[in-house]
Length: 477
Ligand code: TRP
Image (cartoon, rainbow, N blue to C red; front, top):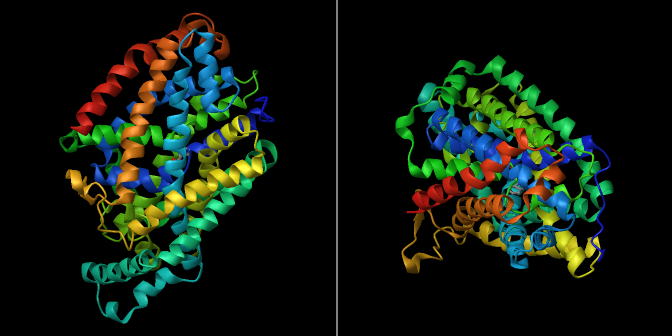
């Protein structure tokens, strides 16, 4: 499609499902709860919500607006909008940084984690979690002693998978394969069709799981944990992490929303859509926390285990609970659905660019971009085993990041979430506020002078850039 004429979403519903599907992902159900856990619970949650409203939402509106205005892949869209304002076409590098550095970089390890999720669906379905409690080493123990013994079992389960690069590669490949297949089929027959089935399923499963958690877990403790802040735990790194998480969770700064905006029919309201997307995304993150933490607390487990919260801590609880086999399996099905509706949006920006630039067809583009993400992802796979202790930046003294060994995986995640995303967000806000023509943005949003438009414009112009610069600098130093 060298002309740059892409397919369009066939309805408002299809677009909302696709965009919410993109936003709601591992970021909400896996990353948000452990980030909140590591960063002191409610204080992080409050800061996070403030960033979603004052930084995330304006950038989301900016991306959808610029995307629809340009109507092409992120790179060419930004170029068009810049040229319309008589500015330098090199602004399109923001789109390039996003689609390639951010999108494919993020997809590379997103897929590795999602691969673990697929493996855990199978494990859960075959009763692996209850076997932890049936182990002879646990027999006769109660309370904390039993938990500690079960924890050893659960850790062994995930560590065996980590230690097996071949298995990890297979699951990673399976997940990228599904992603490529859906994207290759196109906007309507691929992305849209997938989200139309998967998103209702996702909401349904999520509600079942919260209900289950409410019935069987320590719900009040989870509420206190997520909503009673202790600001003494807040540091500049917490704030940087919260900004990164807001961008990550709303699928911003890597071209996803620019691309999804480009397929948006002119009749659909951007500011209303953005509000629905942000509210659903934040709602799901909080609800996921309310599904997870009551179970964690019910068994006296630690909420701050980090990335292993979902794979190590939670299965301990599922293993002990009535119906844990079914609900535990459902939980990982939920994660897999959330991950797939997001990973397709990570591949799309690069694919739409190849279609335009190289005139490649979608199948070729999708396979090409998918192969790139798969290959980079191998670095993350090996970070869990063979190369776990290898620190590629050790020669300049970077051997640890926030307490984790700075192996390839840690470095890629840190670079994408804590550098590319905040910097990308800064550039996008700046671009929308200072580079793009104000009247173009207003016309594209279909809003009158003043009111919502003015608030948005002040935020992207005067609030987002300085706040982001400050956060980036203080978080990195
Ligand atoms: N938002 C998704 C999540 O929360 C991940 C994701 C999909 C994403 N597309 C993105 C993150 C684009 C950043 C940019 O899991």
